[in-house]
Structure formats: structure tokens, C-alpha cells
Image 1 (cartoon, helix red, strand yellow):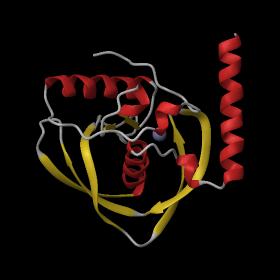
Image 2: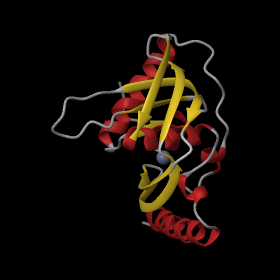
Image 3: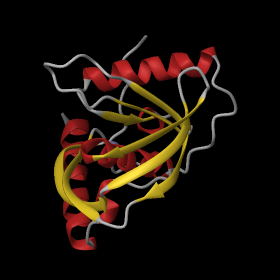
Image 4: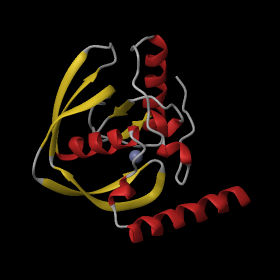
Length: 172
Ligand code: ZN
């Protein structure tokens, strides 16, 4: 397993629409393992493959608290099969937008179908933090960042800050 570099915004690669995974084989599992290690090292609670430069529809999530046992979820080719009518607002962050947080409204509960680590078809119903995390990570598969749910004013403010950070890093 390896910790991979995480792409940070603004970066065109984060806008790519990822392609479905043809089969969950050992090569895909190795990538999922690397993604999980990268997410834990960051640390974060969710990571989509495109954030480490892999344009495939897969993601890893673990919303367990530090004092809890790890509960990694490997999710390949996810699709929504149901979303609730009621929304919930949650303050989101993203490993690709370091130190930027904003409130985003999304459906409060969702149901998805996906392939697991062994390529088996699974279903998952989620609410609370897991529902937020699933929707945030599934957005990444379509090239959407949480700031795309904000007003243009707020989005541009965050993007300008990130661009400035990047220039400072490159100059230093
Ligand atoms: Zn993210």
C-alpha cells in the first residue's frame, strides 16, 4: 500500500467525469487499498479516486471516530436508487480544498447500489454524516466539488484563496 499525493483545487483534473470500473480485480483492489491509506494519512473521512488522479468511479469512506474501530467502506460504480425529499445542511470540507469549509444543503438520506471490495452488488441506505459523505464523494465522480453547490460569490472567494495558497507553495 502507498500514500498517494492528493490533487488540490483549482485543477482541471478534478472536473473530469470518471469512467465506470469494468471489473473489481486485484489491480482495482490495490488502488482501493492505496486510496484508503491515503485517506487515513490525510486524515479524512472520504476520498474519491479522481482526487489521487485515477478517473474511475470508486471511492473510500470511513466515518468512524478516532476512538472507534475502523469501518472502511469500499464503493465502486455507485448509483443513487433513492434520495429523500427533505434536505439537511451540513458544514463540509474536502481534502482537495484544504482548510476550506462551507455549509451545503443536500438530501438528508439516500440509498445507493454499488460493488464492494469483492465485486459483489450491494445496497446501502444512509442518513446523517454518511449520507453527506456519500453524496460529496459521488459528486467527485462527476467532476463536482462541494463549492459548486455554493453561490458564485462564495465559490470564487474560496477558489481565490486556494489559488493564492498554491502560488505560495510553488514560490516557496
Ligand atoms: Zn471532496
